[in-house]
Length: 402
Image (cartoon, rainbow, N blue to C red; front, top):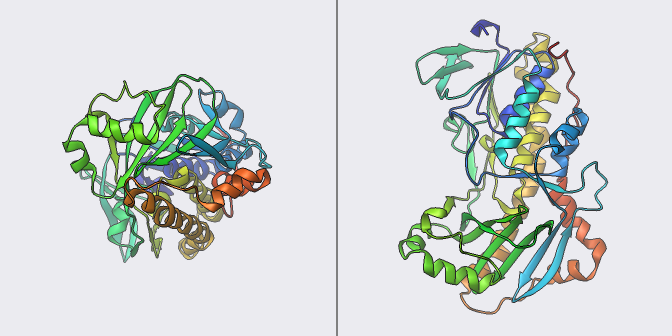
């Protein structure tokens, strides 16, 4: 694809970048996505595809094909303290086409989106192609400069390259702070079907278990900056802590600290998502905590909003500079609401457990209410499953390849 013909360059081939590339190409734009990695295979990336994302796939006529790929379904969330469980969220009654969370490796989800996007003649994806910076002309971003020195120009550039985005060097950032990090690992499980997200609290520790059929994907929540100190003492003290909070876990697969993968948790957001010729979306615009597993789905919603506002005029050859700020106006409310909920949970629920050592943990009053009154469980289920101001696909559809 000749560089001078590009309507859009997207930096980053994650959920926001590939979905945006699909939607803009579907609207008739010429789109080039650059991804620095050679493939999508990264362990312990977000693997949750929520009902709001599956609604979008349904609107695009892709949901049936998506669900044909191997996945597990989660319909509820449970809280376990001292061996007792409280049911705290239920997605099964959501008025949507897929009232569950689909647990699918992110590389499978991205590969699915790539295959669907390649049906449109304007879509191109270049792997193993890192972007070093932006091309600037007359005070605006006019494309990107690749690490190999090539300059690629486009009428619009979207940064979807995550929380370390190159766009963050030029756009103002508000860091909200977080007292936690997460160590990811996986262990075998006996029961094949639970369909649950389980939060286990106690003994100064928190473990989140996500049902993946034959195994649990686990998040061991720790105080921020403590990972190196914890792992310096070897795996046995970590085993002891995990057994104290989740005694039924089979830890035989967790043999060494090298089996633990650190996620440094960050909550922040750009206060300005765009500058002339440039728009940031997804984690580039707002880094989310893993609480609720909503990061992928907010990123996808950003991509849909951006296409709804920009794709049709960009395909017509119009100048979309005056429309860039409307994407932020549309998506800032859900970003703020979800981040506030995440801050409340980490500061008022998670941190007190981590900082109280071996003190007994009482279930929060709100958890007891959710457990006692089943209809209330749909409230956190709805917030987790469909969020705030979910997007509908309104960008136009161009012909696909014959």
